[in-house]
Each structure stands twice: as C-alpha cells, then as structure tokens.
Length: 199
Image 1 (cartoon, rainbow, N blue to C red):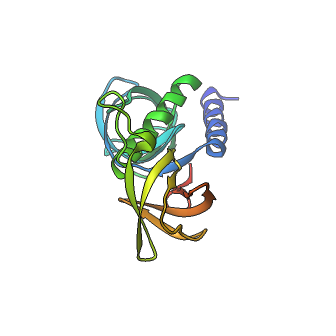
Image 2: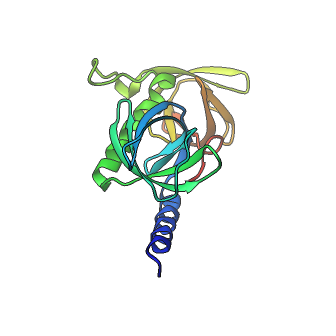
Image 3: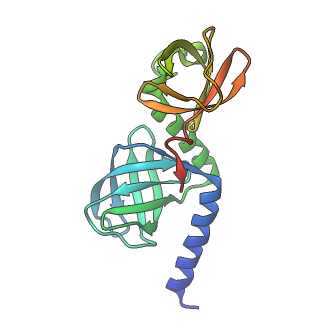
C-alpha cells in the first residue's frame, strides 16, 4: 500500500475513534500556530473537544499536515490536520499523550465555563465552594443557583427554588442546555443537547 494512502487511512481510523470518545463544544478564540514547514499563521477556533478542534484559516492546509498551536491559557499543543472541511475550515486532531490530553480537557472546561458560571481561578484567589452563584432561567422563571459540579459538557446546580422539568431548555449566562436529570437539592444541565455535535 502506498505510504501516503496508508497514512490517510490511519488518520481516518484515529478520527473515527476520536469521534466516539469526544463531543465538541462551540468555542471561538484566536489561536497562533506554525505549520510543519515553520510558517506562522493565526486562525479562529470554531469548536473544540479534548481530542482536537475545528479552525477557520485563510491559508490552505493539507490533510495529514502537522501543526503546532499556541492556545492562550493552555500553551503549546501539537496536532495534525485530520480533515479538510472546506476552503477555510479544518479539523485538527491533537497528537499529545493521554496525560496531556486530560490536562487540556480540564483547562478547556475551565475556559469555556469560567465567565458564564463565575468560576474563580485557584491561581488568582481563594476558590469559592462549588464555583459561585449564578442565575438560571427557564420558561420565564429566574432562580438563584450554586454550582455543584461543572464539566465541558454541562453543569450540576443546587437551588432552593423551583426546578425546571426534565427536558426544559435552561439559560445560564450566554450558554444554554437541557435539564437532563435531578440531583439532591438541584438539577443537571447538559449543553450538548443544544450546542454539541459529534466530532
């Protein structure tokens, strides 16, 4: 089998495995990068998951091309162009060890949720239990909630107010999701039902 063809097949297998493991979340930021030949570029992310991200970039890239991305608050991340989506769109798969991928996932969780959930960076100040207070809105109702747990895919909230019905759309700052289950003294929101798609 031709080497280039074998490499493309390998990339597609990696991509299929990653699709099953990760879901993407909308996240638009400016990112600096280097191509495999050392050319600098600046791109905009479209969405992201622990396994990779989608970018919009004016210059052409090729499937299988190696990249180095410099993402604010995350640092240097190596990747490979897994798919050419259109004239400016590319799916980039991270080529990092599992341990670093876990760290990337943790940092992405922080970056995506920090503004809408009022999270406090442990490096900048004392951590507030549960991440602080927020207002959740659904069906014209606004309730005060405390963040019990947060992930890149959703958030668990504690509240003394009325809980939304399972399946209700809930707005939290600029993000919205669906109430998927009840927890003791609160409820859980899944963002993927409204924003996320398979990689």
